Amino acid sequence: MKSVTLKAEEILHEFRNSSSLPVLVTAGNDSYVIKWKGSGDGHIANIIDWIALHLAGLVGINTPQPVLINVGSDLRDKTDDAEIRDLIDFSQGLNLGLGFLTDAVFYNQDIHGRSEPSYKNRIFFYDLLMLNIDRIDINPNMLVVENQIYCIDFSASMALRSCITGISYNEETLLQRLKRHPFYSLSPCTKLKPDNKFYLHLRNVIEGIPTEWLQCESSESLKLKQKIFENITNLFENIPAIIERRLEIMAKLPTKTREEERCRSMRNRKLAERRFSRL
Image 1 (cartoon, rainbow, N blue to C red):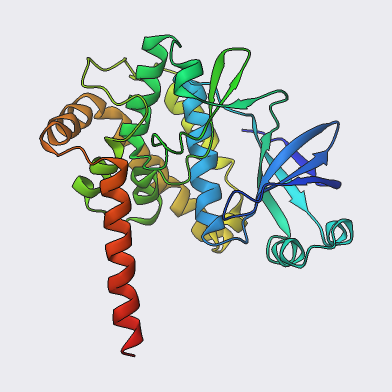
Image 2: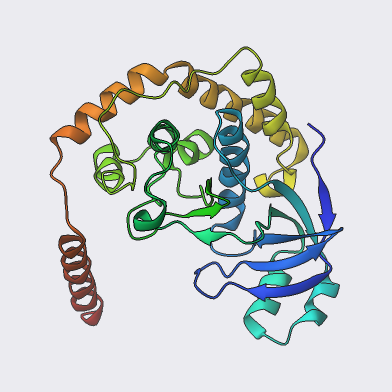
């Protein structure tokens, strides 16, 4: 796949409501949101988002256009913010860029709840397949443009992370959080079964991952990309069984309210504070 690569030219806006501090930049003739590869686990987050955004489009889910944004040291002169300057220093080279959705508003259940049920169902089952735990009722990570829902931020898709890193996770814990998905449903799954061209597109998407994101030598990156392709192929070839099993688990899990989640977080925080205070 020939990936679109653009150079970041000017910083237009900083999104302070996100811990990774993405920024809006001009690149080429348009505006894009940069997700820094130098923030937190930015490299792996960029890879996950790159794959998930492309595959979401293949199964009929609206997303911003993913592109590669080249960040040079000259962008440092376009801001006086020390934190942004540090991110630019750590993120020089290729970063993930998302096409900016003009006039987009954040999804609100009260306002946009009448959206097509089958489309909402598709979003939920895609997130369930990917184990995307970061699309919950209080933070849906969705935008609306002209009554069309666009999904953003797939970086917490733990099934994809496992396909890339080989690390497994406690599925029940993840599914507990997925019960707070805004479109959680036990209704029949909208078909996500790939068509014949899907795996060709998947191969191209994987090949389009910049080697620098993989943080390994070029020779090793070919092996890693092949392994990622095989793991994701296995995931999609077993969609019915995976979805059915996860729904059965979710049906047995208790639903936690926001207040219960808040109290649990407070308890964990106090336990951590007491533990570290003894050190």
